[in-house]
Length: 262
Image (cartoon, rainbow, N blue to C red; front, side, top):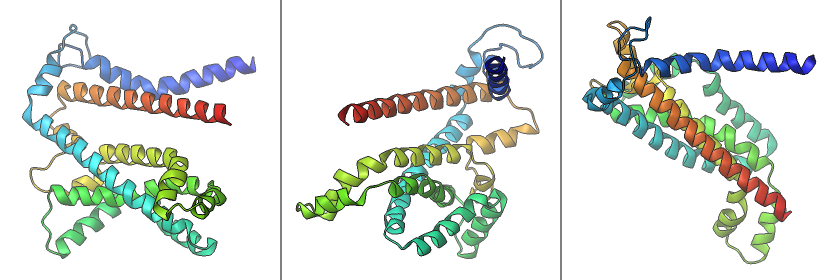
């Protein structure tokens, strides 16, 4: 009885989370524009999506900003973790507390603050300001993902590599980096996802003519969202799902290999 109840509860949660996404995916194949009736199966919204210059520009901006923001934030975040790991516990706790403030801070406060900072220094809002803003709010997520891996490290392996004649850089890349790699991957994927998903900060730091998927959808709400955006959302969801499956499979294989070696 208890197992049955747990199964029903889990099914309800999954249904609640994924039913809206499934509904959106189904509507992306509906030949009609209405959401109230199924007219017939069609791929015309996908064709129209790829032929729509505005949507393609927004998609390109979204993916390139997310990729470069996640890449730079990961590099900066890992470097920061190296410095934090070398600090005393008391000092590390202070900096980790400061790192957590942006995570708890409202996006609208961060967005307005960044916008005012750009305008104060005479920087016109454009693609670059959006990228810089995304890098800024992604770095704390990387630190939060990577720092626990540093805390789990066994320092004697790194020190042993140094004693055997390895340079600090060689010891880091051969000893430390493989152990913290799962945290780095998690931080990169989390940063990428947060960047793709962001609207508020992008809205306040973008210039005229710069659109991402979130700002494009917002601009179409008042006039009515076309099914082409349903098609785009479906493609993004499927792509993210495939990436997550691949990452999980690779991680599981690495864990199995590590257990076999041990």
